Image (cartoon, rainbow, N blue to C red; front, side, top):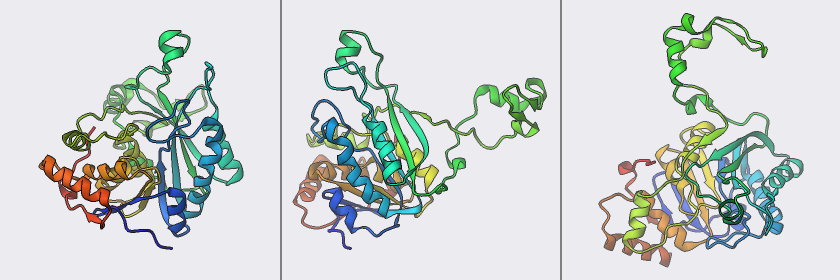
Length: 328
């Protein structure tokens, strides 16, 4: 099993141009700790990044997922971000993302470890016909994110993704006797004295509120500097950061099979995880290298690098990882 030469290499990762269906066959079985990806969604309208018709979508995505199951470690996880959609010309929701989930669990024996919901408060109102014009539907601003695994007990550590305590919880910790008494609640929960213990943060919920507002990152700046269009469907860095921290350890292997602008690889790099990126569109993957550059890069140097990547003459090693920082 041999992958082609990568388009570019970093300290922790490699980015490959090609069809993921073919590239997945070149990976060893049980070799990847986390597959985290956001495929083109089953939308009504064709997008520049290449999406599949709703009627064909479940079958199309299932072929990739069969191969993901093979290469995933028994302790590994598969995190799949799927946006919602409406049926064509009807104010009725498509069930494609739920059909994907059920089929993966019924036919491939994936386990649904937990369902997550990514709430993007910055998302524009859509679809225009039902929300803006007729005003008969609310804004669609939540994606379903399925956390799947091959076994009941994939690697996971919620202590790595604790969130800040609420102001009320901080008051309770400072003076627990004033705010609550240990006893069994009407719900049946037994709230003991340890409830007020400071564990470094609160356990996060499965509703992830993350605005998708990337507008001034190095990637965007360098794309603009040479008049290259950024990938139109990027997800925010905080989304892969949450799952990479939650489900992997430094040195683990993370794979994104629809890497686009390679947000997953960039975040994995900062968190010292080994990463692999697959992307079919050469121009998108070439410009994704900008994420690994720094602010001192001139437009002329950026353009020269981009054109060299487009020629695919050799694998380019990007050496600037120590100067990078995750931005929000």
